[in-house]
Length: 338
Image (cartoon, rainbow, N blue to C red; front, side, top):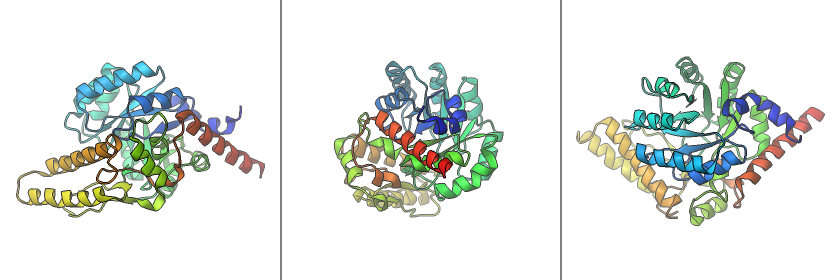
């Protein structure tokens, strides 16, 4: 089989996910819904529903609709600061979802246990080695380490540095998936050789044929290069906002204005810190929806990773995965032949 070396390096990840390939699709709000998720799972990868700001009723419908389109494994990504997190976990348990990804911060007390009680495996994001170890001690079954090259919410450290810090320390005994800035199979091969169990890509799948993203959203990706995907600016250090990477446009400036407005309300005592951060999240959810669904690429948020320069056309998910595997296999074969 042409992909034997890559598949062999992915063995632990494939067995954990129950898939043909240990390739996860990053959970992109409004984009990672039933159509893209089922297409990725049907093509042998691992689709992940982006719950984002959905309420339990909406998530219930989305999981059911996804299940109607695929009989393959898929996961659900939940935001740790969601006010109805435990209700969302219950919805996942009701549908016997096999894997739940917790994103956006440290999992609140009892959340990992609640997911496991529902029968699902827990995947957590680890921005540092110390936190990765803590999450594994607390019951996480696998980690995703995501570098700042990624689209959407990001941390401050690059993928290559995170991989060098975390994989040698944890990958021998634990499942670690690498994400952020991966656009080609050669990069995937490198992380697999370093001990990763698999990889996660978002930007590469955002413009797949099966993605429901608006044609103008996809065209913005096709036009962009790596340096167009910039991080948001934090205006007020007292209002810690997780930076977001998106294509530079008017929406980037509007976010700065929104932060100033929320910081003033925080100062005036009109909102507490939790509410202030939720308001910022809701701003992003609305701005992202305008871009993805309505095609407003001027004032909406066109979230994209730095690998956007490698996205030049619409392709079926199956072809994207096949290309990644072929590129990885060629790279591994060249190294073993050298």
